[in-house]
Amino acid sequence: MRNAFAQEILEIARRDSRLIVLSADIGNRLFDKLKSEFPSRFYNTGVAVSGFCPICYTITPFITYRCYEQIRIDICYHEMPVVIVGTGAGLSYASLGATHHSCEDIAIMRVLPGMHVAAPADAQEVKACLRAAINLGKPVYIRIGKKGEPVLYEDVPDFEFGRWSILQEGSNVCLLSTGNMIANALESAKRLKEKGVDASVVNCASIKPLDEDMLREIFNRFNLVATIEEHSLIGGFGSAVTEWAVDHRMSANNLIRFGTKDVFLHQLGEQQYARKQHGLDSDTIVGKILNCLAGV
Amino acid sequence: MTSLEKIAREIRYKLVEMSHKARTGHLGGSLSCVDILVCAYWHALKIDPEKPSDPDRDRLIFSKGHAISALYACLAKRGYFPEKDLDQFNEEGGRLPEHPSPSCVSGVEWATGSLGHGLGVGIGMALAARLLKKLYHVYVVMSDGECQEGSVWEAAMFAPMHGLNNLKVIVDFNKWQATGRSCEIMAMQPLGEKFRAFGWRVKEIDGHDLEALCVTMIDWMDDDPRPSVLIAHTIKGAGISFIQDDNNWHYRSPSLEEVAKARAELEIK
Image (cartoon, rainbow over all chains, first blue to last red; front, side, top):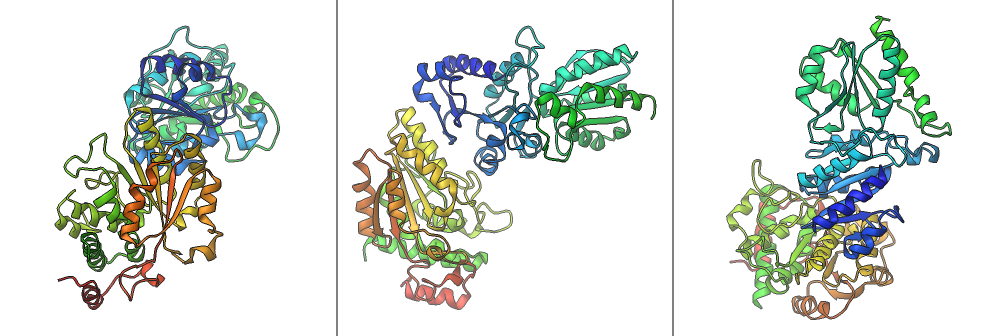
């Protein structure tokens, strides 16, 4: 995802002279081309640049938690067209320890007035999402993975804030997933199929705003809806869907949420291991969905 | 009395009136920066109140947002908005919040109130000028207590690195913060040496000497490749005997009798 991000940044920089990249001491080789073509448009720090469209990029905890008040006041309060990109979101850097995990970023970003939040599914969607964010001209937060994530789209898909896309149609359960958990949702759907359960899978890359039209349709149509995200169950995408359901008098009984637990992970391991600790592996997801459908 | 002195006295009296009417604190920190703002708005800044959004205008980021009454009063007197609007300070439904909101009134460049943001914002604007090949200058007015914020020093490292000599910082060093003497709460001094070590051009000055402020803001700050910081030694509550250097006025607002007393002292007709 981060390579696709850097490629797309270079492409956009060539077309759009407003684009400025502010990085915080990462991406040593990632931005080499940008730096050589546009030396005055890459800065290794984080400051507000008026009259431009700054893209701020570093590892997720350091571009969200660390500088939260600057984001709140200097970006959101002033409605600045700044795109904040957190790389290695969720448990992407699981083995680096909890300092590098980010399972609370969606919560704190989506609560900010005027902020838009997106989690693209793969390297292709990163490109689409970045283009849409720059065109939007408003505060945007994009959480992406690192590298080597499965590629789901052959070409750059359509991306629009407030619009989701159905990846596969099913009738028994609807899996709403976002960001780098979409591959996991698709895998879970495949395994459910083997158990005779027909699952829809929706790519909910736009976390704020939600796709309300699609949500209404989904809650009216499915007896069971599941949200799957690599983020805390507190305040994340699943929380946003729950809030929406309650506010729109949809039955929250039909909803099951998968996300990280309310703990810092002390066990050392890679991303898949960390997901398993949080019950975010497809074994656990499939098991819980089957239990729900069976009324357990 | 020079015309700038007269303006500064009138603004000081207006601040006392505003604090009384709105029942707001922070009068001491507003009074300490009046002379700095008068020199900036009547002498140094290249601005036109008729064209507050002129892309070539000089910008002043008033980072010590708690003292915003001083900026409001200057902007109104300079013609950015009617002086009668100052009556709306801290009024329900009014245009002038106790800490400024974005574009609450013409001339306010940035919403401040949480200390330690203004320098980074000013750097962004100075960098934008450089990239857009514009000649405007960016002034940032900070408080001394504000220099205890870590974000100030992150920003202070960036500006010299990129040779932002269009950036001019003025520290209103009034020696007090909310709960005590700033130099007794943190190791503030030597503040000038700290900036110098970070690569800034530093000058220390009497922040109530209008003539020296005017000369320095224009002449001294314009002929060096480094960003400049002017450490203006000021007195909290300056200009009014019973307010100056008394930190109770960080929170207090004056009574009607005190307003009259200030009026007499400032020789306001």
